[in-house]
Image (cartoon, rainbow, N blue to C red; front, side):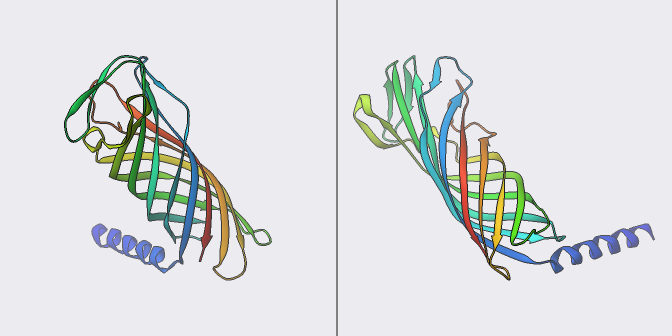
Length: 217
């Protein structure tokens, strides 16, 4: 009997979730990106610019709470300064990069987020929101620039893990124009949880601060 009651509760809860509204947003996120490691002999060397562009889907299970997912293309990376020499796999073969060299990583991912979005009650035409979750990344391009070695956009896909997970937390405001149409803006902090590179001698992570701009419908 308890099993039937439990199944009924799950069914009712599921029907409530899927009976709530569904909304979509097209977003563009210009960002500042950088990389860091756990090794003192490998240092962060400045900041880069990147961007994320894609579609976000919010499934509201109450008026103020939504489960959120989507699909986007993320362009990120950063600069690492290697104090000691290091071997790099450039696809065509391994090469040794001398100490004192800065490598710029240019990384592109397909990103699928899973998150929770919390909206405030609408005041006038404005709603505030908080957004927290994880990103699942699939690497689709990885190149490196090494100006001191006259290397530009060299393939380093063997140096980069194909799969990656990052966390993100952010918030912002939505301004409604009536109905389901609104514009939104916010700020997000994102950080990789898994090692970006395949190198077993150290761990490297990317971090990003982004400005979210979007249209919701």
